[in-house]
Amino acid sequence: MILGNRSLGEFVLDQRAFIALIVLIIVFASMSDTFLSGSNLVTMTRHVAYNAILALGMLLVILTAGIDLSVGSIVGLSGIVAGVMLKGMNLTLGDLLNTTAYPSVLVVVLVSILVGTFVGWINGVLITRFNVAPFIATLGTLYMARGAALLISNGSTFPNLRGSEALGNTGFSFIGTGRPLGVPTQIWLMVIVAVLVWVLVAKTPFGRWLYATGGNARAAELSGVPVKRVTTRVYMISGACAALAGLIIASELTSAAPQAGETFELNAIAAVVIGGASLAGGRGSVKGTLIGAFVIGFLSDGLVLVGVSSFWQVFIKGAVIVLAVMLDQVQERLSTARAAAAAAASVKKEKEVAARST
Image (cartoon, rainbow, N blue to C red; front, side, top):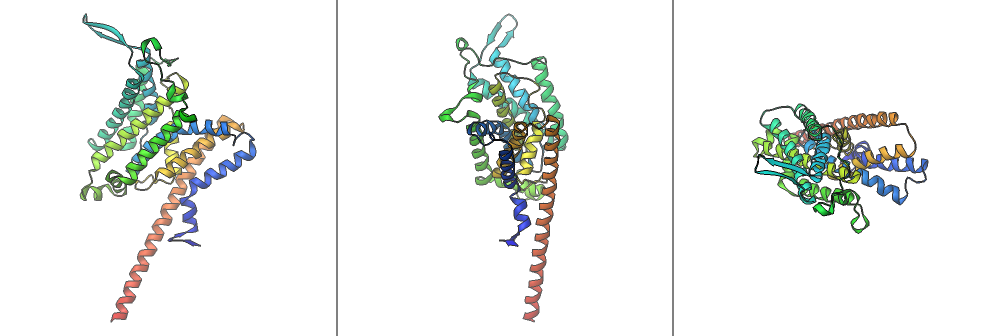
């Protein structure tokens, strides 16, 4: 069966994330009466939000055929930076200065996001200037960012991050617990980030450069695409998204722990791949990534809701990631075969036309 220029198999593979999401909803709804309740759907979407924000940043990196393993550590580092600033920073300069500063929540948020962006910039510089493979570069910054969080906090958790009205730094908990227009703040943030990334990918020259870089970096560079600048910027955006996710988690829990965000990079990569992006670069979409994030989030919360052992939860998540990569390879082979068949048909037609003309 052919749908447009694609076979039924290609169509199903292309829509695999949406199909998987529908199957998950049907299965868990049949196993739990509360799965489709309004309160549970809102709770699950709140959990999806920070993974989706991480995945949207990861999407840009994967579009350029890169990978960012440092995002989970940036989640923990940004929360610790926010915790230090909200609890008060001791500023000392010899006999000239000895005071404790309590920045406003806006300053705390901006500085934390800048820290994440800076880690992303380091990744970009290592990859573009020193030709370090993305896997190795971001693996190194994964440990560096986690180590920095542990050093800053001395391995401790910063509790009670609500701030103090007397110090003028209240309001941090609003990021994780506020409900503007009745919708949780983190869901609004997910929507805003998704729209911004969609505009960047689909409506700007930078988006076209992303796909060109991932498709063939050398050809893109020869055609005038600033490949190194594009690569550095996508890692910076990924770092900023990870820092925002870290702020959401710290705000929701009103505490910051240096261990926060461990293995979150795997959820982000899984969401992007399940959403139809290719790890080889050059293929992926915001819509697919969002659906992939919902698949991962609903799967995790659904397994908890129906009482599946935490050990089995880890196993099932790993199996889903492996299956997603296998399906991506199948889709890649089908697309290559279809392109080869189309090229062969075109050559055959040209020969027939040439034969008739003679």
